[in-house]
Image (cartoon, rainbow, N blue to C red; front, side, top):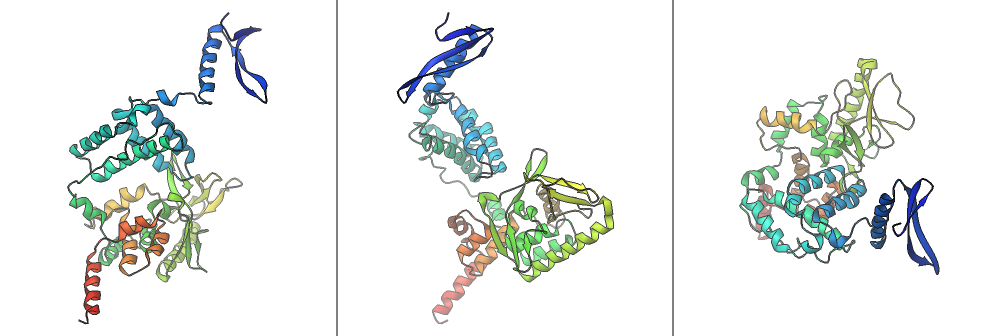
Length: 410
């Protein structure tokens, strides 16, 4: 009979000695195996896992591919809604599967830590293949984050091979730069609102970020019933609307950037009018109107107006809906609204993020304290705000010249 296995009734068990606890001997045993061979194989695996302090693998022999899977599962997916979002997890997985694993997956993790030259060569090859600096930064940042986690807290390796790697200088993509820095002028914005007037499905998806700087997912998650306080003149940003599987769900805002934003009279009047129109439309459509509910887990459900949701479901009034109450989503905004603005109105630089950027730029140009801008936009830290809104707009250049002229007594 093989060592450490025995037959009990009709099945086989394995056993082995474990460390003493309080001076007492301990034995680990598990049964239920059909054959002696199965029990022996399970025993060998259990001993290896026991010797690795409960791990089912040895870090010293682990491949980079297996480690990246482990990192995605344990550091990212298990922390969704606690520092990471579904979108972040999805983006990291895409980067890992498309470029990182094919390049580095077969290496042993313990050896990979000594390979900054290999990582540098990979970055240089991405540059040669025409990847943008922003894309390369994203791929390198993903790999670096995973390796940082392997250093601390895991201590699987002692050094991150990405730390000394440099992207270096690259030709400036002027078209991309122009698009990223596009600020929607009053003239452009007026033209846009003429095309999407009050009452249209996307009107508030345009005015809210223009007046508050909300992110796209945050904008579409605003609940007119619970998130707007007309007494205090505030909007509460406490969630974002995200696609999970086949459905839409409320999840915490990016970087857990919960915040309360003061709003002015113009936006407040539009929100009040929107609430009024919802009531009118609900009466007009009757049972055909769709009411929106948030389940306890944040999942969004829509039911005919004459149906009642289960207990625990909270009725909400979404910011953007069709006339019959059907909810609009962040996915439809680029493919419909943005496409119309670019193709029909000829505003080719317009994109889903530009109204948030316009709001921040207007605040910066008019001397609002960077800390206030940071808190209003929900940036992770002040460096993001300063790095985004200190570039030289024409308005800032003129203001600098006027201030200097005034200081010189001109």
